[in-house]
Length: 253
Ligand code: 13P
Image (cartoon, rainbow, N blue to C red; front, side):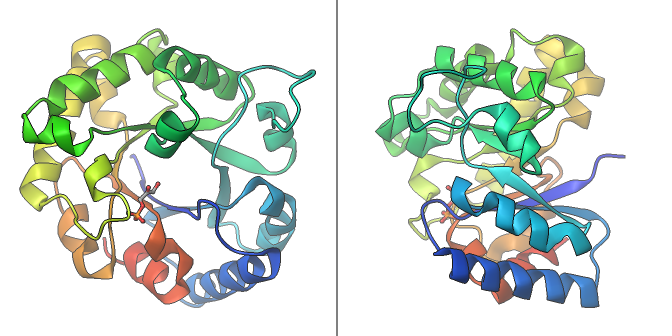
């Protein structure tokens, strides 16, 4: 059976000391009262990964993700980090196509498709992000917009490879704004995404795919969002920086 996921994307926040403190607090709370039905993923900046991997050796319920990866195997790409390096640092997941990377680093669908391949070929699970800006939502074009992102980023994959991918729907207008998608909006989009996946990979593969919601998810709205039929967890930004809030969200299933 598929397991729900809660992933905490720290973005460019936390010194190493702050990060260690945050993860220690989360891990202690989870160890005291385990939540077996949820996979918990911490997604810190690259530079924290190896240290946090050591810290998490004693907490097998929590694993690590990276916020990005390079699309090449290795070589003269100054400042970049490969998927093989991530794997060898104890990382299991990698976020690909976050709207901030699409917007600020000009990441195209074509580039993201190669990053997905690179992640899968080194044994990392891609958390592939999609989501529309406000202008597209206001003209009711959100489904077509997101379907294009999914088709271009993922639909070159075989059914077997697709089965290893996690999807995160993050409407851009909800990220960091405090404005969450309503339960009806989230369910409608998640269902539409699942139908789009089914049109390519069949009902069974679409049903098994985990589709996370992201965008101003917090303890006060997590229960309602996670109770929705087609929401299989959350990709959490701001609220993942506070240990009590993050653990509250984890316990919202
Ligand atoms: P917020 O939860 O801060 O809105 O961020 C969501 C996000 O972008 C997670 O990747």
